[in-house]
Image 1 (cartoon, helix red, strand yellow):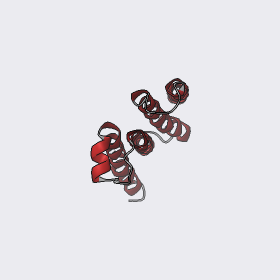
Image 2 (cartoon, rainbow, N blue to C red):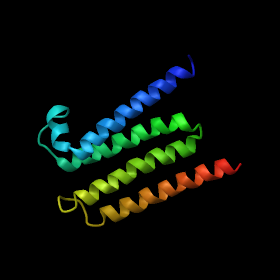
Image 3 (tube, rainbow, N blue to C red):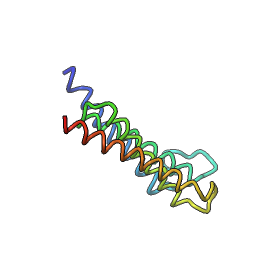
Length: 125
């Protein structure tokens, strides 16, 4: 029970975070109307909220498949960062700087490569 309960919570909460995050990211107007009707409506803000919710869910789900804290942290943050970079690509022209997608994309890529490298390094030992 001590081992199973936290894992079940991690999976259920992780899937909930990812699901709500995807909803905010992919259909921000519906998410705004049904879940978060704080005016004014801001599509980019909801894309960011979705990106970070997906990252939080990814961290929880990765804990179920790995006990390597560094891999889990890098993986979850990398996934959230990649979604954040994608939000800036999608919303380009609605504000922000032209360089945001590039800078955020590079950051996400570096973090994801570090997670991939960490996972491979841990398997090799």
